[in-house]
Amino acid sequence: MAPAEAPVTAVQAAAYTVPTDSPEADGTFSWDSTTLVLVQAAAGGKKGLGWTYAPAAAVGLVEELLGPAVQGVDALDVPAAAAAMARTVRNPGSTGLASYAVSAVDCALWDLKARLLDLPLHKLLGAVRDKVAVYGSGGFTTYTATQLRDQLEGWAHGQHIPRVKIKIGQDNGANVPRDLERIRQARAAVGPGVELFVDANGAYTAKQAVRVMREAAAENVTWFEEPVSSDHLAGLREVRDAVDADVAAGEYGTGLPYFQRMCAAGAVDCLQADVSRCGGISEWLRIAAVAAAHGLEVSGHCAPHLSTAVAAATPNFRHLEWFHDHVRIENLFLDGTLDPEGGSLQLGGGPGNGLALRAAEADKYRVL
Ligand SMILES: [Mg+2]
Image: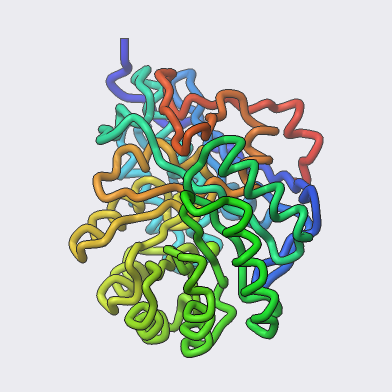
């Protein structure tokens, strides 16, 4: 019997840092570890699970501000909790890290509500599909030719995922010959029948980005992510108008007005949003509506297992990023993770997000 109401009784946060399995870099950043900030929210004898990939400082935001803001709010009224969190981060700033922390709590609350009602989360949200398309994502600029080939072949031919993405824009766009060589290597690895995506992480200038696509024309790249900085909406538009590939951006977006501006500027062919950054499931649904009003689809950025339910519930959804680092961590920390065989994730029938924390395994990496 579902409860008539269930006040939130506790919100806990913890941070875990997991070393990468190899040095990693994209066009504008390099890293050797990833930190996951996990939130567990409790009500009515159930616990909901959410997370974000963010500095451990996000734990402090949850403990000092967000947890107290949602304590006592009815867990069945997630929008009330989202409104309480929006009020509490007004003065410290609602964008950036605060939004990442809000996202983790919001996702935990949606999972909690689904568990209280004993429903799969995608059913609580109302699904439009029971399978979510994914693309394999990695292809770091630090990889050797062999590492690149092995990773791409694993997705394209091992797991039969018909879309893959690699990083380009090495050294802030200063190594275009190697970018072009790696695009050719990627196409050779996956063959002609797999979609090839590239992500420059804002490394190029607009004209440089157009020239790269012209020189790579034979490799049929169909997705060009952040050819220039996602803050340069006019530059994105300039590239979009000049290349055949779809231009995409939005992964750093926090708050609805960010996405409204990006859509209204005609900056992208497909809007990206990250449910672990943008404000959680509550805000994702509004972002997707903004995108729809501009005739755009939404692609999910990273955190794949946090994204599947809301992706299934989004009518104008295109695909979800099956990101190497996050797949690895989520498979390590969670029971109930999904299999991308054939290029899509089949949503399960269990309550909530269908995931359970492997606490003993996660604790080996706990930093806060
Ligand atoms: Mg990206």
